[in-house]
Length: 317
Ligand code: BDR
Ligand code: CA
Image (tube, rainbow, N blue to C red; front, side):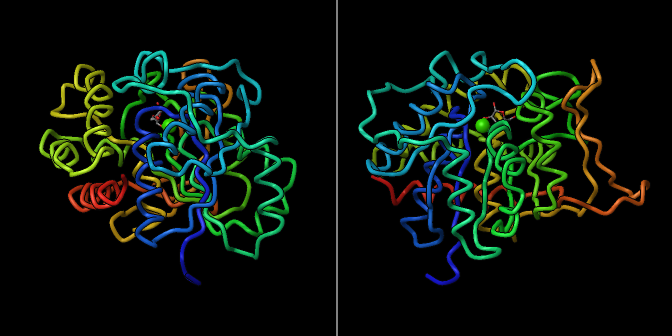
């Protein structure tokens, strides 16, 4: 397992987060990653629900001892904005929820991340944040030495060529905690960003959903049910044949980077503008001369992405 990607997901489940987490459990079962832990953050819903939902999803994967830590209950400086209108009041609409058996680990997510990164070899751990970046920014603020151990941060957030989804200018994760996003971008860690520019090319069409629904297990049809409920909102909003499946793009890009294309750019996040809070300024043509700080992804082989998602869900109970 020497070359297996060691991966931690920071998340605010969230229906598409659930797809990403289930995919990661499947990738671990397939021997493609060493899935170390989940750290929860407030975002789509409050921290009590995101931490609970993360544990429920681990139960679904039959990972009832999986390490789940609760982290920040609000953004660094702004009040918490949630997205119940998309994900439902539980954060996981579209499926029956139970009291999780998977216990919540004691200790704060940020402490876990700092301790784990400090104990790790250089360049050895991939962080995969798929919610607001509050926990990750706190780690980098409190313990900048942790950058040494981060192989790459592969995150879902931001937008540039695609319009915003929470305001006309901004994507939800970056809007929710723009200051955290800016701290992460300035940290010096190697960063890959999966913005709306690419996730809007990863559409859950009916045939793709049917592949999941027809899987001979519990998790395939269950995930299809969750995604069906999730995309109802987006289909209405965007008028497309299906909704974008945001968060699994980050997990997939961490493991199968060959399915994605982008450009090394300098990326900054607006933290002051009233109309543009959380918007990304991506120096696509290098006009500022600033050194690139992120790989900004714009293209995906969506058929192969959905094949990998289905193959990963297929190995779950
Ligand atoms: C992001 O916002 C959340 O609602 C989704 O879970 C995803 O992480 C997309 O903008
Ligand atoms: Ca999310």
